[in-house]
Figure: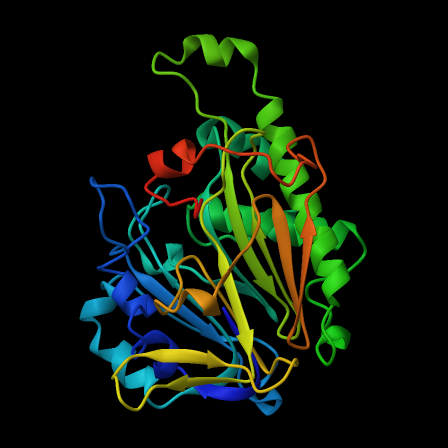
Length: 332
Protein backbone atom coordinates (compact mmCIF):
# COMPACT_ATOMS: atom_id res chain seq x y z
CA UNK A 1 0.00 0.00 0.00
CA UNK A 2 1.26 3.48 -0.89
CA UNK A 3 -0.53 6.65 0.18
CA UNK A 4 1.17 9.94 -0.51
CA UNK A 5 0.52 13.64 -0.55
CA UNK A 6 1.95 13.64 -4.08
CA UNK A 7 1.83 11.12 -6.89
CA UNK A 8 4.65 8.63 -7.31
CA UNK A 9 5.82 6.65 -10.33
CA UNK A 10 4.72 3.06 -9.83
CA UNK A 11 8.15 1.71 -10.80
CA UNK A 12 9.67 3.38 -7.71
CA UNK A 13 7.63 0.99 -5.58
CA UNK A 14 7.09 -2.07 -7.75
CA UNK A 15 10.32 -2.45 -9.72
CA UNK A 16 13.26 -0.48 -8.42
CA UNK A 17 13.68 -1.01 -4.63
CA UNK A 18 16.05 -3.81 -3.56
CA UNK A 19 13.17 -5.85 -2.15
CA UNK A 20 10.33 -4.54 -4.31
CA UNK A 21 7.10 -6.47 -4.62
CA UNK A 22 8.36 -7.71 -8.00
CA UNK A 23 11.41 -9.18 -6.26
CA UNK A 24 9.20 -10.63 -3.52
CA UNK A 25 7.24 -12.58 -6.15
CA UNK A 26 10.29 -14.84 -6.70
CA UNK A 27 12.51 -14.08 -3.68
CA UNK A 28 10.23 -13.69 -0.70
CA UNK A 29 12.51 -13.56 2.35
CA UNK A 30 9.62 -14.00 4.78
CA UNK A 31 7.78 -16.72 2.88
CA UNK A 32 8.81 -19.92 4.63
CA UNK A 33 6.74 -22.53 2.78
CA UNK A 34 9.27 -24.72 0.92
CA UNK A 35 6.41 -26.41 -0.96
CA UNK A 36 5.42 -23.08 -2.57
CA UNK A 37 8.44 -20.80 -2.27
CA UNK A 38 7.19 -18.28 -4.84
CA UNK A 39 4.30 -15.83 -5.11
CA UNK A 40 3.83 -16.79 -8.75
CA UNK A 41 0.07 -17.34 -9.09
CA UNK A 42 -0.57 -13.96 -10.64
CA UNK A 43 -0.47 -10.38 -9.42
CA UNK A 44 -2.49 -7.20 -9.43
CA UNK A 45 -2.23 -3.42 -9.24
CA UNK A 46 -4.88 -0.91 -8.27
CA UNK A 47 -4.41 2.83 -8.35
CA UNK A 48 -6.53 5.96 -8.35
CA UNK A 49 -6.54 8.34 -11.30
CA UNK A 50 -7.53 12.03 -11.57
CA UNK A 51 -11.13 12.74 -10.43
CA UNK A 52 -12.10 13.68 -13.98
CA UNK A 53 -11.82 9.99 -14.88
CA UNK A 54 -14.26 8.90 -12.18
CA UNK A 55 -13.99 7.63 -8.59
CA UNK A 56 -13.20 3.97 -9.34
CA UNK A 57 -9.56 2.83 -9.26
CA UNK A 58 -7.83 1.43 -12.32
CA UNK A 59 -7.20 -2.30 -11.83
CA UNK A 60 -4.59 -4.31 -13.74
CA UNK A 61 -4.33 -8.05 -13.04
CA UNK A 62 -2.60 -10.97 -14.71
CA UNK A 63 -2.03 -14.67 -14.09
CA UNK A 64 1.47 -14.31 -15.52
CA UNK A 65 4.08 -14.28 -12.72
CA UNK A 66 5.00 -10.68 -11.93
CA UNK A 67 8.67 -11.28 -12.72
CA UNK A 68 7.79 -12.38 -16.26
CA UNK A 69 5.23 -9.74 -17.29
CA UNK A 70 6.59 -7.19 -19.74
CA UNK A 71 3.35 -5.18 -19.55
CA UNK A 72 3.90 -4.63 -15.82
CA UNK A 73 7.28 -3.08 -16.56
CA UNK A 74 5.84 -0.87 -19.30
CA UNK A 75 2.88 0.29 -17.22
CA UNK A 76 4.77 1.01 -14.02
CA UNK A 77 7.36 3.18 -15.76
CA UNK A 78 4.70 5.51 -17.19
CA UNK A 79 2.01 5.61 -14.49
CA UNK A 80 1.74 7.80 -11.40
CA UNK A 81 -0.74 7.86 -8.51
CA UNK A 82 -0.97 9.00 -4.90
CA UNK A 83 -2.82 5.87 -3.70
CA UNK A 84 -1.68 2.43 -4.85
CA UNK A 85 -2.41 -1.19 -3.92
CA UNK A 86 -0.13 -3.97 -5.22
CA UNK A 87 -0.43 -7.71 -4.58
CA UNK A 88 1.42 -10.89 -5.61
CA UNK A 89 -0.48 -14.13 -5.20
CA UNK A 90 0.31 -17.60 -3.88
CA UNK A 91 -3.07 -19.31 -4.06
CA UNK A 92 -4.67 -20.99 -1.04
CA UNK A 93 -8.27 -20.88 -2.29
CA UNK A 94 -9.58 -20.44 -5.82
CA UNK A 95 -8.27 -21.27 -9.26
CA UNK A 96 -5.60 -19.49 -11.29
CA UNK A 97 -7.51 -16.77 -13.13
CA UNK A 98 -7.59 -12.99 -13.56
CA UNK A 99 -10.85 -12.81 -11.60
CA UNK A 100 -9.09 -14.29 -8.55
CA UNK A 101 -6.18 -11.84 -8.56
CA UNK A 102 -6.19 -9.03 -6.01
CA UNK A 103 -6.98 -6.21 -5.57
CA UNK A 104 -10.76 -6.43 -5.86
CA UNK A 105 -12.90 -3.33 -6.19
CA UNK A 106 -16.46 -2.06 -6.15
CA UNK A 107 -17.14 1.52 -7.23
CA UNK A 108 -14.55 3.59 -5.31
CA UNK A 109 -13.66 0.84 -2.83
CA UNK A 110 -10.59 -1.40 -3.23
CA UNK A 111 -9.64 -4.50 -1.19
CA UNK A 112 -6.73 -6.93 -0.69
CA UNK A 113 -6.14 -9.90 1.62
CA UNK A 114 -3.10 -11.87 2.75
CA UNK A 115 -3.96 -15.05 4.62
CA UNK A 116 -6.97 -17.39 4.79
CA UNK A 117 -10.40 -17.83 6.36
CA UNK A 118 -10.34 -20.80 8.73
CA UNK A 119 -12.60 -23.77 8.00
CA UNK A 120 -13.47 -22.14 4.67
CA UNK A 121 -15.27 -25.05 2.99
CA UNK A 122 -17.54 -25.35 6.03
CA UNK A 123 -18.38 -21.65 6.39
CA UNK A 124 -18.59 -20.60 2.74
CA UNK A 125 -22.23 -21.59 2.30
CA UNK A 126 -23.35 -19.78 5.45
CA UNK A 127 -21.39 -16.67 4.47
CA UNK A 128 -22.89 -16.63 0.98
CA UNK A 129 -26.46 -17.20 2.17
CA UNK A 130 -26.12 -14.31 4.63
CA UNK A 131 -25.33 -11.78 1.91
CA UNK A 132 -27.83 -9.47 0.29
CA UNK A 133 -28.48 -10.30 -3.36
CA UNK A 134 -26.54 -7.35 -4.75
CA UNK A 135 -23.33 -8.41 -2.99
CA UNK A 136 -23.79 -12.09 -3.76
CA UNK A 137 -24.01 -11.33 -7.50
CA UNK A 138 -21.03 -8.95 -7.38
CA UNK A 139 -18.52 -11.77 -6.83
CA UNK A 140 -16.74 -12.82 -10.02
CA UNK A 141 -14.11 -15.28 -8.74
CA UNK A 142 -14.01 -18.10 -6.19
CA UNK A 143 -11.51 -17.02 -3.53
CA UNK A 144 -12.22 -16.65 0.17
CA UNK A 145 -10.65 -13.18 -0.15
CA UNK A 146 -13.25 -11.88 -2.61
CA UNK A 147 -16.10 -13.37 -0.59
CA UNK A 148 -14.65 -11.56 2.45
CA UNK A 149 -14.84 -8.34 0.40
CA UNK A 150 -18.48 -9.09 -0.46
CA UNK A 151 -19.10 -9.56 3.26
CA UNK A 152 -17.45 -6.19 3.97
CA UNK A 153 -19.70 -4.51 1.38
CA UNK A 154 -22.74 -6.19 2.95
CA UNK A 155 -21.68 -4.98 6.40
CA UNK A 156 -21.11 -1.43 5.14
CA UNK A 157 -24.53 -1.43 3.47
CA UNK A 158 -26.30 -2.72 6.59
CA UNK A 159 -24.59 0.04 8.59
CA UNK A 160 -26.41 2.54 6.38
CA UNK A 161 -23.56 3.45 4.01
CA UNK A 162 -24.34 2.47 0.45
CA UNK A 163 -21.12 1.41 -1.36
CA UNK A 164 -22.71 2.62 -4.61
CA UNK A 165 -23.52 6.10 -3.33
CA UNK A 166 -22.08 8.70 -5.70
CA UNK A 167 -22.52 11.44 -3.09
CA UNK A 168 -19.64 10.01 -1.05
CA UNK A 169 -17.07 10.09 -3.83
CA UNK A 170 -15.58 13.51 -2.98
CA UNK A 171 -14.73 12.71 0.62
CA UNK A 172 -15.08 8.94 0.95
CA UNK A 173 -16.79 7.19 3.83
CA UNK A 174 -14.29 8.41 6.41
CA UNK A 175 -11.66 6.36 8.19
CA UNK A 176 -13.81 5.66 11.27
CA UNK A 177 -16.62 4.17 9.17
CA UNK A 178 -14.20 1.97 7.21
CA UNK A 179 -12.62 0.77 10.44
CA UNK A 180 -15.98 -0.04 12.06
CA UNK A 181 -17.05 -1.99 8.97
CA UNK A 182 -13.74 -3.86 8.98
CA UNK A 183 -14.12 -4.85 12.63
CA UNK A 184 -17.71 -5.98 12.01
CA UNK A 185 -16.54 -8.07 9.03
CA UNK A 186 -13.96 -9.86 11.18
CA UNK A 187 -16.59 -10.40 13.89
CA UNK A 188 -18.98 -12.00 11.38
CA UNK A 189 -16.24 -14.29 10.03
CA UNK A 190 -15.41 -15.43 13.56
CA UNK A 191 -19.11 -16.06 14.29
CA UNK A 192 -19.47 -18.17 11.15
CA UNK A 193 -16.50 -20.31 12.15
CA UNK A 194 -17.81 -20.67 15.71
CA UNK A 195 -21.11 -22.01 14.31
CA UNK A 196 -19.49 -25.02 12.59
CA UNK A 197 -21.24 -28.10 14.08
CA UNK A 198 -19.24 -30.26 16.50
CA UNK A 199 -19.86 -33.34 14.40
CA UNK A 200 -17.98 -31.72 11.52
CA UNK A 201 -14.84 -31.68 13.63
CA UNK A 202 -15.31 -35.38 14.44
CA UNK A 203 -15.77 -36.25 10.76
CA UNK A 204 -12.60 -34.49 9.66
CA UNK A 205 -9.96 -37.21 9.64
CA UNK A 206 -6.97 -34.86 9.50
CA UNK A 207 -8.44 -32.27 11.85
CA UNK A 208 -10.27 -29.09 10.93
CA UNK A 209 -8.18 -25.91 11.00
CA UNK A 210 -10.41 -23.05 12.10
CA UNK A 211 -7.84 -20.35 12.79
CA UNK A 212 -7.93 -17.46 10.33
CA UNK A 213 -5.15 -15.17 9.14
CA UNK A 214 -6.90 -11.93 8.19
CA UNK A 215 -4.46 -9.32 6.97
CA UNK A 216 -6.96 -7.14 5.09
CA UNK A 217 -6.52 -3.78 3.37
CA UNK A 218 -9.35 -1.54 2.19
CA UNK A 219 -9.56 2.00 0.85
CA UNK A 220 -12.26 4.32 -0.47
CA UNK A 221 -9.73 6.39 -2.39
CA UNK A 222 -9.18 8.73 0.57
CA UNK A 223 -8.54 6.74 3.76
CA UNK A 224 -6.93 3.30 4.16
CA UNK A 225 -7.57 0.66 6.83
CA UNK A 226 -5.33 -2.41 7.19
CA UNK A 227 -5.48 -5.26 9.70
CA UNK A 228 -2.94 -7.69 11.08
CA UNK A 229 -5.07 -10.37 12.66
CA UNK A 230 -5.21 -14.04 13.68
CA UNK A 231 -8.21 -15.68 15.35
CA UNK A 232 -6.12 -17.10 18.19
CA UNK A 233 -5.03 -16.08 21.68
CA UNK A 234 -1.67 -17.84 21.39
CA UNK A 235 -0.49 -17.37 17.77
CA UNK A 236 1.19 -14.52 15.93
CA UNK A 237 -0.48 -13.13 12.79
CA UNK A 238 1.22 -12.99 9.39
CA UNK A 239 3.78 -10.21 9.08
CA UNK A 240 2.88 -6.57 8.42
CA UNK A 241 5.08 -3.44 8.47
CA UNK A 242 4.66 0.28 7.88
CA UNK A 243 6.92 3.22 7.16
CA UNK A 244 6.33 6.96 6.85
CA UNK A 245 8.34 10.06 6.01
CA UNK A 246 8.64 13.12 3.83
CA UNK A 247 10.17 11.50 0.72
CA UNK A 248 11.01 8.09 -0.78
CA UNK A 249 14.40 8.45 -2.42
CA UNK A 250 16.98 6.23 -4.09
CA UNK A 251 20.58 6.43 -2.93
CA UNK A 252 22.42 7.67 -6.01
CA UNK A 253 25.51 5.66 -5.07
CA UNK A 254 23.70 2.30 -4.86
CA UNK A 255 21.10 1.23 -7.41
CA UNK A 256 17.88 0.05 -5.82
CA UNK A 257 18.75 1.26 -2.34
CA UNK A 258 15.78 3.38 -1.34
CA UNK A 259 15.37 5.17 1.98
CA UNK A 260 12.43 6.82 3.67
CA UNK A 261 13.69 10.34 4.36
CA UNK A 262 12.34 12.37 7.29
CA UNK A 263 13.02 16.09 7.15
CA UNK A 264 10.52 16.92 9.91
CA UNK A 265 7.95 15.29 12.19
CA UNK A 266 5.28 15.32 9.51
CA UNK A 267 4.64 12.61 6.94
CA UNK A 268 3.93 13.07 3.25
CA UNK A 269 4.23 9.35 2.44
CA UNK A 270 3.00 6.16 4.14
CA UNK A 271 3.91 2.64 3.01
CA UNK A 272 2.41 -0.62 4.34
CA UNK A 273 3.80 -4.01 3.29
CA UNK A 274 3.85 -7.67 4.26
CA UNK A 275 7.61 -7.51 3.75
CA UNK A 276 9.73 -4.33 3.90
CA UNK A 277 10.70 -2.96 0.49
CA UNK A 278 14.22 -2.24 1.73
CA UNK A 279 16.71 -3.76 4.14
CA UNK A 280 16.95 -0.56 6.20
CA UNK A 281 15.51 -1.79 9.49
CA UNK A 282 15.20 1.67 10.99
CA UNK A 283 12.75 2.64 8.23
CA UNK A 284 10.13 0.01 9.12
CA UNK A 285 7.83 -0.53 12.10
CA UNK A 286 6.04 -3.79 12.92
CA UNK A 287 2.25 -3.58 13.18
CA UNK A 288 1.22 -5.38 16.42
CA UNK A 289 -0.72 -8.62 16.10
CA UNK A 290 -4.51 -8.16 16.20
CA UNK A 291 -4.46 -4.47 15.40
CA UNK A 292 -5.80 -2.11 12.78
CA UNK A 293 -3.63 0.42 11.00
CA UNK A 294 -5.51 3.46 9.69
CA UNK A 295 -4.11 6.06 7.29
CA UNK A 296 -5.93 9.38 7.16
CA UNK A 297 -4.25 12.29 5.38
CA UNK A 298 -0.87 10.57 5.82
CA UNK A 299 -1.41 10.28 9.60
CA UNK A 300 -1.03 6.70 10.89
CA UNK A 301 -3.19 5.41 13.74
CA UNK A 302 -2.81 1.98 15.38
CA UNK A 303 -5.71 0.50 17.36
CA UNK A 304 -5.96 -2.91 19.07
CA UNK A 305 -8.81 -5.18 17.97
CA UNK A 306 -10.72 -5.75 21.21
CA UNK A 307 -12.38 -9.14 20.85
CA UNK A 308 -12.10 -12.61 22.38
CA UNK A 309 -8.56 -12.97 20.98
CA UNK A 310 -7.22 -9.74 22.47
CA UNK A 311 -4.55 -9.85 25.17
CA UNK A 312 -3.91 -6.56 27.03
CA UNK A 313 -0.47 -7.67 28.24
CA UNK A 314 2.09 -5.93 25.96
CA UNK A 315 4.81 -8.42 26.94
CA UNK A 316 2.70 -11.48 26.11
CA UNK A 317 4.56 -13.82 23.77
CA UNK A 318 2.64 -15.43 20.93
CA UNK A 319 3.82 -18.43 18.90
CA UNK A 320 4.88 -17.94 15.25
CA UNK A 321 4.13 -21.59 14.46
CA UNK A 322 0.73 -21.17 12.80
CA UNK A 323 1.79 -18.38 10.42
CA UNK A 324 4.94 -20.34 9.57
CA UNK A 325 2.86 -23.45 8.81
CA UNK A 326 0.99 -21.37 6.22
CA UNK A 327 4.26 -20.28 4.61
CA UNK A 328 4.13 -16.81 6.20
CA UNK A 329 6.46 -15.13 8.68
CA UNK A 330 5.11 -13.65 11.88
CA UNK A 331 7.84 -10.95 12.23
CA UNK A 332 8.49 -12.06 15.81
